[in-house]
Image (tube, rainbow, N blue to C red; front, top):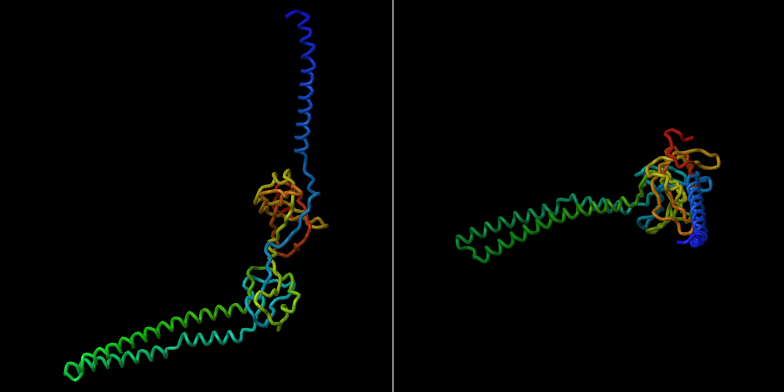
Length: 300
C-alpha cells in the first residue's frame, strides 16, 4: 500500500471510529443513568391502600319462619358459635319431641315379640298333633309359615325403631337451623334495611338479615410498582403508616398478586395486621413506610 493510499484509508476509517466511540460513551451514560435511577429510593408516599376485614359474610335465613330474637345489633362483637338470630321453632320442637318418642317406644317390638311367642306355641302344638294323627302336614306348614311371618314382623319393628332414631337426629338438625350461629369471631357491621331484620318479621329462605365481618386480623391492600414489590418478602413484617395521624403498625406480608394491573401496571400487595384491641377500622388509608423489614416492637 502506497503512502497516499494509507492516508486515504485513515481519512475514511477515522470518522467511523469516532462515531463508534461516541455511541459507546452515550450508551454507557444511559446505563449509568438507569442504574442510578433504579437504585434511588422509591417514593412510597405516592401510593396509598385501604384496610378491610379479613372475612365478610351476609347472614341469610336458612328457611322460612318468624324472626323471634336478634341476639346482636349493629356494632356488637361476638365469638364463634354465639347465636346471632333465632327463629320461632315451636312447631319444629314438637316434631323433635314426636320423633324422640317414636325412637324410644318399645310397644311395636313387644307386640311383635308376643306374636312370635304365640306362633311358636302354635307350631309346637300342630307338630304334636301331627304325630298323633290329629293334624295334617298342611296344618304344620301353615303354623310354620305363621311363625316365619311373626319373626319377620319382629325384625320390621326393630328396623322401624332404628329408622325412628335416625328421624329423631334429622329433626334435631332441623331444629338447629332455627338458630343461626357465628361462623367466626367478629362484629356486626350492619343489619339488613328491610323489615327482615326486625323481631317478629316473617322471613323467607335466603332473606338477608345482617352483614358481619372478622376484624382480627385486618387486611391492608395496596398496589405498588414492581421496583418496590421486588424488594418485599412474603411472611416478613413491614411498617405501615395508618391514617392522617401517622400511627405506625407492623403488618405481615401475606400475598403478592401474580400479575400487574393492565391499566396502572401496579401489583396488589396484601398485608395482615393484628387487631385484637379493635384499634384499626375498616376503610382506613395507609401507606408503606419502608421496604426494609420492620424491627420488632416498633409499632406506635
